[in-house]
Length: 294
Length: 315
Image 1 (spheres, rainbow over the protein chains, first blue to last red):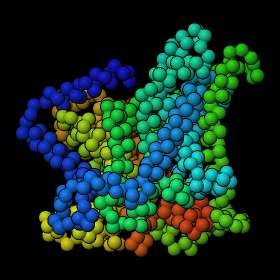
Image 2 (spheres, rainbow over the protein chains, first blue to last red; image 1 turned 90 degrees about the vertical axis):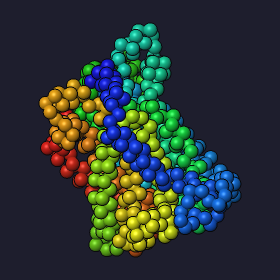
Image 3 (cartoon, one colour; image 1 turned 180 degrees about the horizontal axis):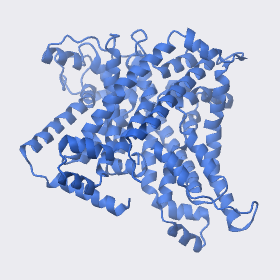
Image 4 (tube, each protein chain N blue to C red; image 1 turned 30 degrees about the vertical axis):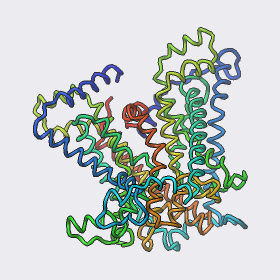
């Protein structure tokens, strides 16, 4: 399917949605959808509301969105209640470094698979693909032994590297590189560019949208990950990430709901910002990177 | 990624032209560049995936405590799980129950929602809003829902005051705990499938849809006979991927119920985690992980064989 026809289709579809007449049924459908969306987001809104209530009003009867006073102070108290700044810094560091490693390793590999000619390429690519089938649970147990052997248990690098080399990014970017016209690469070669130079100055700039989507989803996966930090981190005060720290403190002091909710709301911020940055490319990004099953 | 895509692209990749081995010149240079470009990925994949997979095989055949002597057991770890471990078979059953509830609910709701939103103004906004729980840390979502599920919490209160239902203590009642986990998981997971379906709807060929409308296809008939078959690759992708992820359910049950009450929500991954890192018996944990993988592989294989009957690819 060419980009042209896809674009026309999208415009036609949009035109139908926009141009349709506002029949009573259509108005009702919109009103209902807004209502359903609001209901759907109630848990998040209620979390924000609870984060702003004074202690002890979480289970007021009847439930209310606003407590007896609006306590912004809760968001500051969180940082006394648990070492939350530590968790945030750890989480951001792990996610940023992890994302950079993933982008570097998978874009380099993807280029070699997509555009360089060498023997054994297709068989090696199949090995890459085969590793995609192995679920994290199978890897988690021996990975812990590996961390023991490397002396990495309870370390920053243990949170970053074990999951930075999955074949997923390589596969995704390879698909993207393969769509780039050969002429561009040949022109660069004729101008005397080495493969490295072609990769850096021709391929990477064109691949920015795909790299962006990969970066966002990798960051979110690191920021949200729970099982592995739970296994490999012993000293939560020192190395805890946001989900790990939150869950442990939650287990110990479960009655401080207003503070737990304040912490939860804070930990939503980075992913929400990324979602807003990505929103225009959300559907296209998932479709274009081959994630939509075609 | 699309699994069908994986196999197809691997086959259709342009063949590598044969060349004399060990030659010099631009071809040899290109080859060395390729090795250089691939080395981080290959080293990483070998150390952090291929080697652990091999280790996982070895470990599953050994008595392998975190600290202390290791000894060869053969298939005893597997036998132990299937015959002796009090929670393993329960965890298998719970995981299947979770998947059997979560998968159809998630797929049907996200498909319906995708069509609804596609016919509305501002659909970009709705899609992004429904995506919020998907990018929210699972731990955070689970903690929020745990608050809603508490006695005197929001659900308890409104079930009582609006419908007059005396709600159970959702997470502490073995009859309702699994449903509570499923409801929270559907809320969390619907956004991703919604986006995948939305992309498929946006890509539906208008010419075919118009032709169908001229032929008199409307409403449900149009949906079942025209749109759904055209989208069947996306439906297949979504059901396969959702099945795989739901068999791996762990975080939400761990936060909401810790597997309880009793063992009514213990999942297979929690069983692996507890065998390995609470009981510190890594051999049994590795064996459990392989059994989980085997189950997932089996179901995926069945789905792949079954797809020939209902999935239509454009050729």
